[in-house]
Image (cartoon, rainbow, N blue to C red; front, side, top):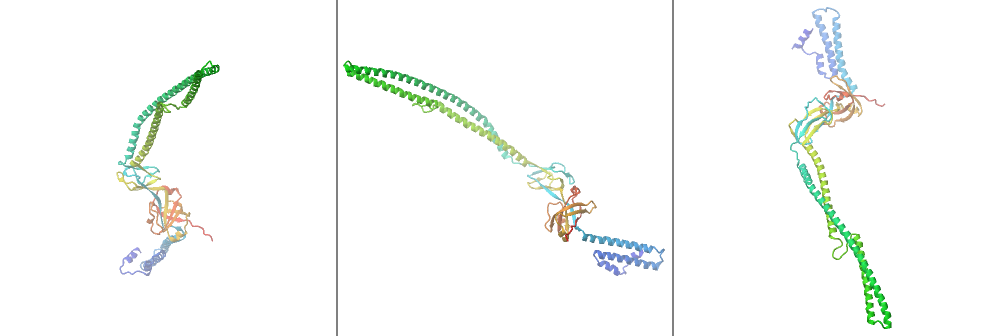
Length: 452
């Protein structure tokens, strides 16, 4: 029978049967099933006709077994090709899907030369905070750092001189203060002695006044009897007046001396040959003011030195940041794309490499419009890999529809081009964190019960 079929298939004079023409015109799944069924039965009838012409069958059950096997094969083909459309109709599933993950692009903060901190392989799993590269800039600007150091050195050299001048001024001020105190004490003793002298003069003048008054009284009595002349009485009267004025002048000087003593006790010196403050006191005040100015200059110098020291520390850190920078991984993952190589000169802000964020795995899927319209955020879903692995359950977290796809994914959703409606599913299983990005499959969405 096989030989006869082969001869019929290569016979150029043979014409296609109506069954063969019908199978070629049908392209859908149902037409394919019907064509296969008809072809099987046509082959069976042709085989029986040929065998009847050649020789009788060796046994009665072989035609029935062959016919049953062909019918079983046909039914299996019909079941397979019929189940696929039915499953697509009854299930909410995606047309295509891929296990995806977000990318983290690492850029250089400074310009310089790339140096590898450790050997980097594409499959190596990296923990968060791992130093991958170093950027070394040997041409960093350190002008400000050098200026700050020079200013600090100059002030530190000037400070001992200011301290010495301040100590000398304070010593001179103390010496002048001692001289002014001695002058004040001496002046007070001098005024006290003058007051004592004036008091003595007052007592002497009072005694002369009393004596002159007694003489005048005696002369007045004798002048009445004619024993004393008028001239003598006038002289004695004049001496009494002089004694009284002398006593009065002494008392005035005593009052002036007491006023001067009180002023000296209060720190003010009165006199005709000098001003209210002696030269020693004035010099002591000038030296005190100079010592105060030097002390303020020294304090300002110390403040500037401390400020410069702090600025130098800050500038050293800034210069270190500009001269060398470590490129570390912000998340756990693996290297997805190296965009530079050790020894290459890069500019600030230039991308160096992309890290696959294994903790942020997602499933991107394309669905038909009818399925998309039935989905909502929070719906449960299951990713079924094409490689036969375990399904990965998840939740619908984003429905972008026909909008532009995000650009920070490892596999751009535009690569799924069969349908324009896009859905993002966040996996909830630990298997999704294995960084197996690129696994393809389909996503089956759970049906929701609709209210009657």
